[in-house]
View 1 (cartoon, one colour):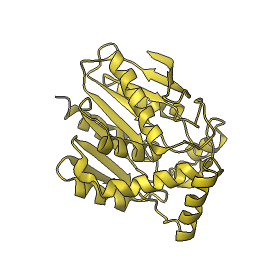
View 2 (cartoon, rainbow, N blue to C red):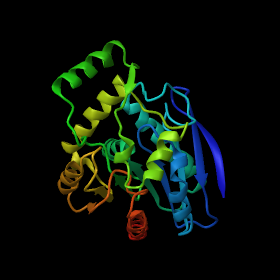
View 3 (cartoon, helix red, strand yellow):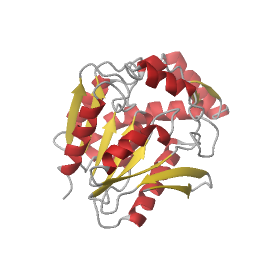
View 4 (cartoon, one colour):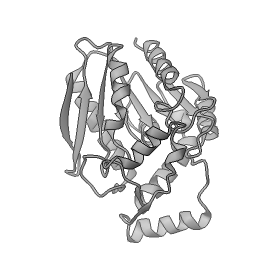
Length: 276
């Protein structure tokens, strides 16, 4: 059963949401998508999870998809974490007696990682972190970072092209072309969103000791957008609560690339192993 819903964020912004529900779920997952995209691109992931008795909840991030807000902008990174909290509360209102997981990809991976290190995670059974933006595969120059800091103060909503090369998403040209043709996608990122996400990614590497829940972290070794090496370092610093898997021959969007079936099976098996 698929239903649409709307969440009102703490600052009044309206967030478009969708839930893919099964009658008797053994778990529920809340999804946080990546930069420039929207939750409609995860229909096949939802169908896979539903077929294995797992319900999925998701909202378009502010400034993305069908949610309100200037494209590619957030007033603060902390506000994104608050939006995730609203999504989790929505899921808990639907199910208060089954394990609940967070799942974030790319920018969403950054948001989920920060969430589990900064927020109360007593309600979470674990988190799945896919190709997280902890650092980028290419490091911004000192000048670019200083410029972002300047505009983040004087004109925080100033948005520019994010520089994403769609060919770096997957090996599948049809999927990459569909990404470019999708009117709900955009290629914008504001000075504030870039700077605070950049800094939040670095912050996670120095605060791994704050993690209290099981984490599944995975990355493709051909990712030219976010750094697989940094994901591995993060997992190693977290220690025994983290499970890290690096996929050979896979680019940024593991759930859409050549080994997507294996990736989703790994997610399923990990969730099944953390249902208590």
